[in-house]
Amino acid sequence: MSLQLLSDFSLRPHNTFGFDARARHAMHIDSADAAAALATDARIANMPQLVLGGGSNVVLTRDFDGVALIVGMRGKRVNGEDDEAWLVEAGAGENWHDFVAWTLAHGMPGLENLALIPGTVGAAPIQNIGAYGLEMGERFERLSAVELETGARAEFDRAACAFGYRDSFFKRAGRGRFMITSVTFRLPKAWTPRADYADVARALDGAATPDAQAIFDAVVAVRRAKLPDWTVLGNAGSFFKNPVVSAQAFEALKQREPGVVSYPQAGGQVKLAAGWLIDQCGWKGRGIGGAAVHDRQALVLVNRGGATGAQVLELAEAIRRDVLARFDVELEMEPVRV
Ligand code: EPU
Image 1 (cartoon, rainbow, N blue to C red):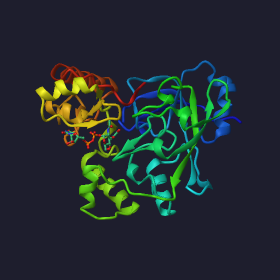
Image 2 (tube, protein in one colour):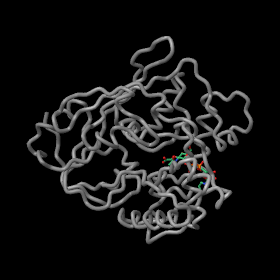
Image 3 (tube, helix red, strand yellow):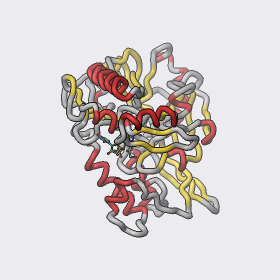
Image 4 (tube, rainbow, N blue to C red):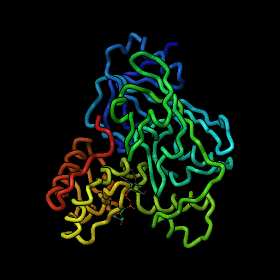
């Protein structure tokens, strides 16, 4: 199998911030076989490799002196069922939102809370995408991947993925080592709505028993109202994770800042709304050069035009310092820096 090796490749259409970075080389990888063949491809031996799906969770800080591997495996199919659930598999290169819509159209609800999240199916497990009361890990069955160095195929079940809040094995020990080729989801036959999240409940406008399509529509409406469309205003969704602090630290903070927005966690810890912390520091709508804080959701940094990854990181650092100084809370960046 000989894949075309492209040179001086623009990454601009391949990152949702729209940064104008270039890769020395690039290859389109459209099958698991093509992914497995990379390990023995002499043309790219010893070259740094960057696996890119939709590019919705990366900050490209400069040109990439290596080969960008653009993930393009397609296909969606029901791949089995048991009494409790349908197993549905999709190629890593499928668009996430289109896949969610497809499952609903085929009468298999369960992913509707994750509608309109940018990016690909293959990227979803890496940061365990989550929104409006659901994390992808809850609907995950297994994934197939190829180890880039050896070309070996590997299967990961839920335990092996070690999902956490915006976290998985693929952001830690597995970082940069694998290309995910397909993902299989477990969609429950006994579906129940998740409609507790305040914004979604409001958009449902008191509907007593919303169906999955109603939740899908509500989530789409909420996201359109608050989150910028990356095709219009480049961004990578939430730029920071919502920080989790100890009960003790939270009590101390609440004394000083009674308005702090928080969510109790299992085990007594407390998750804080980073958007609120940033908003309180007066950052909403402000920026450095082309990099700015979104004016409707302070957790999202945007490229107003012509921003570089370095400028976005500079802005993020200024925000991190302000939040630390005022709240004594450390913010952690969510996208991956390249
Ligand atoms: N808030 C403010 N000012 C802001 C932004 C938020 O005061 O500028 C307050 C809101 O009023 C609300 C609270 O902070 O009380 C939480 O805001 P929101 O509901 O918008 O959610 P979030 O915690 O900021 C998280 C996820 C989003 C996800 C939403 C809905 C993270 C890092 N972000 O945001 O995920 O869509 O909840 O579930 O967990 C993403 O990861 O890219 C992403 C967009």
